[in-house]
Image (tube, rainbow, N blue to C red; front, side):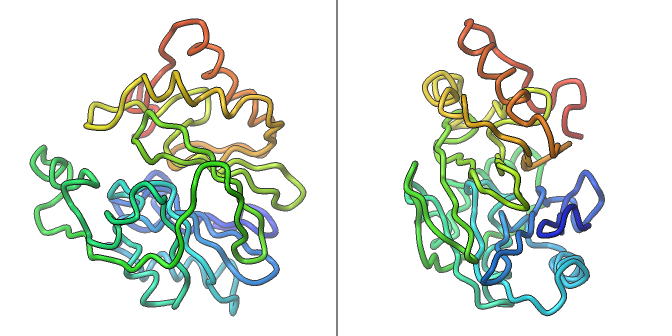
Length: 249
């Protein structure tokens, strides 16, 4: 699904693009090729690549950037790398999870036990070509990415500030969502302490477009949605969280 001149949504459970276990997978076309933000759950990659080919035919995928290592974002990494030969970027904090396919550390094992994922869904180990760190800008596909670590959804949860199609954009992963919703979940590694410490990093960035890992996105006024969550946390309150009032599913 083409969203703008150089942006497409190529997988998403909510929009029924690709599979049940897919987050939003974004494709950004830069001067040197396409960069994918997240890889989805890996089960329906033929559909993912069909959407990619329709959006940007003939443009090579140069890079895959993982926002964090939860199953719906990272399990498809090995398949994407094998199919495209792209570089895979992962958080330095959790690079080893991707490289070893550690199902306990990524949360897949616990999610299987809880019945959230099928028993036969596996995390195929994927070589990581480069890692990134909070605040250390890097270039992929000819685009400049600024990674911003905001703990709270997970210890390795990052957003990426990128200028694309003339808009200051935030690819937020599961850190913050449309409407000021945050990604606090009932899972190991998710807590308000991380949000209290880190969410303020997203203040004052002049974000136009907000593209989260699930749910609605917006091309205008993105900073307003972010600030809604930031202001509540600063005042000692907990913003709405994913899964409440059908904020995702």
